[in-house]
Length: 430
Ligand SMILES: [Zn+2]
Image (tube, rainbow, N blue to C red; front, side, top):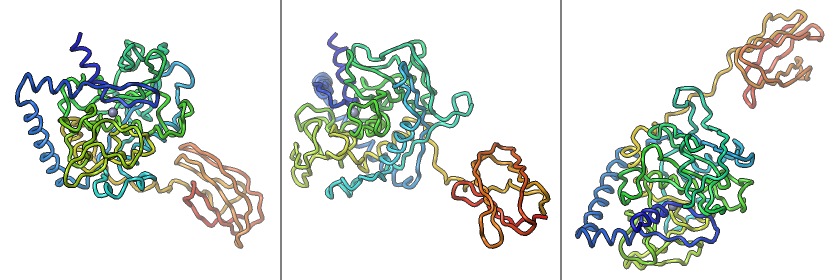
């Protein structure tokens, strides 16, 4: 029983909590102290492993500095009530926020204090909605399922059943190829205590083995209230809770909390990274004066800006360079095959498949569209006066064929798609 409790408490360390009153505890450090007493040298071995991992990952970083990796994502929206079936726009805004945070290009990067600006990092990891499902069929990366389950939270607050079709949830898509994100309602005895949680890659450095999970359970679970920008289901819509997923994907790629889940001590466990200053415990306010651990020469304040702290979301604005390096290392070594190298996007389509026939025009103006889109057609005379215009959507094979009741003469036909002019042609009306 005691062993089970330890495991549950250690699992708690990878959660993000809402602002609701909740006394969070974790037994990680106590557990490792126990291991060290039982197996002398445990701490030393752990430290050697950390150093090895860092040196390996820094080698990789140097050799592979500019490559951007993209991870295909599927959102499983597992809903029971209409409000849980969140709109596509929330998914899109969430993905945008996730990418901007991981690339460090969001609008509030200026919140990073000057002391930490040199270590603020672009992870060069991006996230894209999956375009093919596991069967190779086209998808928009948003998988919706109406469930009879009204609340996936068990008596421990977790929602592991949402990852199982058998338990009224949805089985993961191949977790080696997709980042699975389940969105559902889950509470702890009726209260949404946990906003989201994730598991680190199996065998990730700096984690106790009790934190790992089976491959079909890999991914992130997010409460439907806390996804997307200004989610109308959030009890505090302006709280920037879209950063919840940033924190969880940090865990998914192997980052620990920057205070390493210590319980009010500066001694012992660390997150393994040198550019995240040591701190005693989770910080829960944005006070820039916080400096909970004196590290001697070069001492720095607590990094309340870091996504892997518990500070309120408006103040979390950065990963460090070492966090970025570690995530990239884990992505390429422990989540093998999950990412693809980002290539330059193909040039925007050239709309050559529009033709006017016949020209000269006799009676009807006939335009053949072979490519779908929303087009605006404008006809002007030789001195630029508008004769007619209109906008319409067409499918892949569409023929515009209408009488052109104008006097004989020369006219100009302009066809545009959004801001792009796709055809400009002189026509002769007889
Ligand atoms: Zn966490």
